[in-house]
Length: 134
Image (cartoon, rainbow, N blue to C red; front, side, top):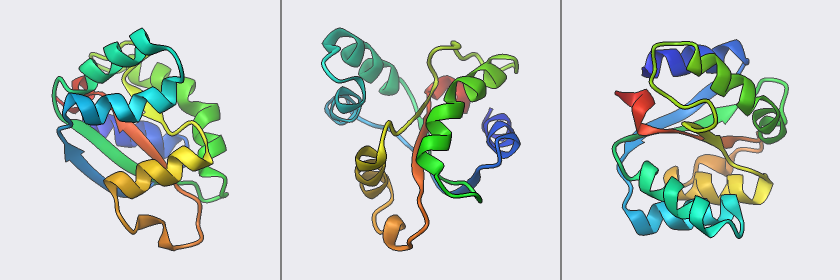
């Protein structure tokens, strides 16, 4: 599970700067995904419930060429498709998320990895659904 996630990230040239496994409660998950999903309240609630269903693998990602946020957004579908081809039980359209923009990346990184963004290198957050961690 986790090794396959790391292999896919390595294929896309990401460096995992920090990682942790966490369990989140529903209010935390809802706050996190509501801003990701905007006004899609039903989608946000369903996603928050899924995130609470088990451990999450939280990763702080860097890209050697810089621009980690834009690159992660551009390659998230490719990474999801690659993970769907493995034995990880992960729906293609879910299971792996990245922060949607610079502001959210700073907020998300500060929440899960306080002080991680003290260096000038741009980083983004990647969240892997519980199914991929088992």
